[in-house]
Image (cartoon, rainbow, N blue to C red; front, side, top):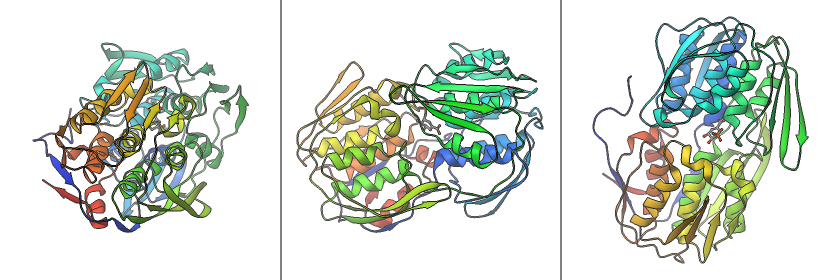
Length: 449
Ligand code: S3P
């Protein structure tokens, strides 16, 4: 298994510096970038993609799409062309599909392979090898997929033999997960019948939007209070379409919170995706009293986007309801950092899924807060952070556990703490935001090795 994180760890520290200012152009959205490649593979003809996130996770998906038969060219920065083979046209890869750190890439691609009469082995780094995959394999097995080999507990490395004629199923996802939903829909693309996914809480809908955009027949209806029912007619002929990837709100979260915390800061984040299933952090920060102006809202590349003007703010603690979790699932580490500087307590409810992200994020965040001298408690699935009213001690080294968002969150924290904060390895940031360190320095951040 190759790993982009081989070699020695590279610690990086952040200390309080000058006010942040400037215009920020963030990289493309990770979720949409993975899907853009996959839809390129599954349509016959040429799909052009602009604004692709060229992070390590997405490059693993590019490699996997090539191994399954696509011809993929990089035409310029973020500009790619995929010549796809179409639904039913994939070939078995002649090597292990190494997804590195990428949960999304590996899980969505299990769905793709599961819907084809081919065999493939999925593997990844030490973080991916710990992540639960039964949640993907279980519905795929119902569709006729055979799990040929798996590590203990349904973990990578995993070999599956896909189904030539995937059975159309109706599946209620046991946890709110766009990855589970997407894997089933992608397998269902090659099913002779209708595949239905029911989710009790709506999760990011990029797969559904792209299915419709590429010409599949999809019906989405409300289910219960917060849920959705998604019905897909199998065996459409997907037509290649140009894709413009909007800028990633989950990456925007880092300079955004940094600007809130560093005195005197004033930043403009340009063209950030505002899909309502991704804006939970924004809602929460506004409730906390953050000065964020949503400017020039518009529709670009099939998504709502807007510019965000962010100014340093005194935040107050809030109660974040569990129902908001799907719309900000990747943003809790950076919210915990923001909450540390607030006045009063912030309670974040219903964080059980954080335990199975790139790291056990609940524990990794808690350990980082402890290093920084912030008082917190974990009560069941809730994280409670006692805000320090702007004065956080800092100091200490945070273990990143191969988790890009832990690394970025605690570097942002160090930009406003009394003593610098160090993260034990910055290399993993490249999975989702390769330009993070340079971009933050360009805005005024004082990072040092
Ligand atoms: C993603 C879904 C979420 C999220 C991940 C990206 C996606 O995972 O945490 O970073 O692109 O579908 P879950 O489906 O496990 O909630």
